[in-house]
Image (cartoon, rainbow, N blue to C red; front, side):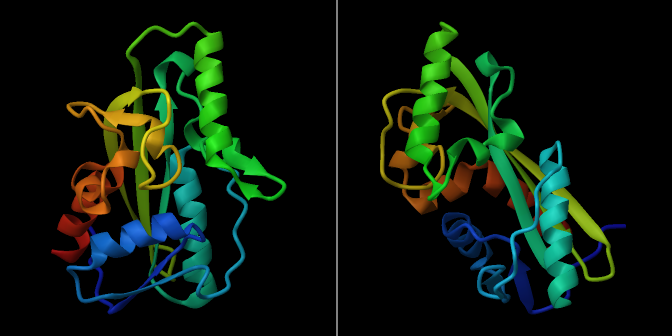
Length: 203
């Protein structure tokens, strides 16, 4: 039996402002106040899982345990077929530098690897999202979403975050980086997972 969300405050277990903005917009229609792990000055837990659900669970349960609040976490990334599903759970890791995350560097690395592999076109890929809502007593609910498309080059658009400027969803001739937040939130992998979460726990 799916557990319902019965509170009025939700902690989003992320330090990523772009992700936080997207989740807050998706939650806007609901009467729930939203804060982030960064707002609560929580440390970032070590994400040493091997799957999106592993890492999402690590973040959600760490935040719920630390604050006594219901916590929602997201672990997401891009899987590129010509790179055998990479970067996958290591999507953010590809952007890590000593001075923070550099996604232009990560996107350039991705393109260079595809070129080195002489990957055929279209360079099919998908964005994957796993949402975990965790309660302080250790219970959780898991929801997944997918957005299929292809990796394109050069980078296009200044919207969104992460790898959005090189990801063109199926059925579109623009990248996620060229879409405004409202359009992206209608079709993204995160929106897909959110619809399932809302139907199960909030509706």
